[in-house]
Image (cartoon, rainbow, N blue to C red; front, side, top):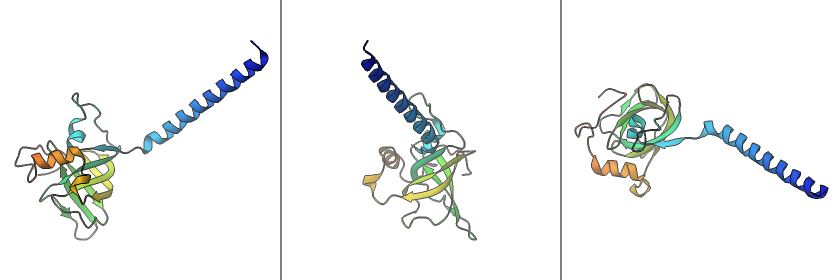
Length: 163
């Protein structure tokens, strides 16, 4: 092989190795900042037919569901609030300290972003209320159709909190 071609080949290989290494390091650094979206039943039972990919305690996540009627508990002295989110197959509890959105109410679809704690409790840093059903994820929309009023009366298991 010609010396000139060999040098070009070495430069191309070095550039490809450098790009691969840089991409790998960026992906590794961003891995801890990814917030995955879950529904309450996926938090309790996992995703898919095999029920794999159950989130672990301490994981950053976003959970979307409907605020269970009668579950909102506000602390009269602080901005702390606790409520339950449900979908067709499960209920999880969310705690949040801060001012809730104006559209937040029982029976409303919301997305809470936070960290999963023991007992299927989500300690939320942010709560977003949905204002229109056309922006609702299909899983939550199906849950609302199957279970619009009271999930406990319809047999949805409650885990990670009191009834």
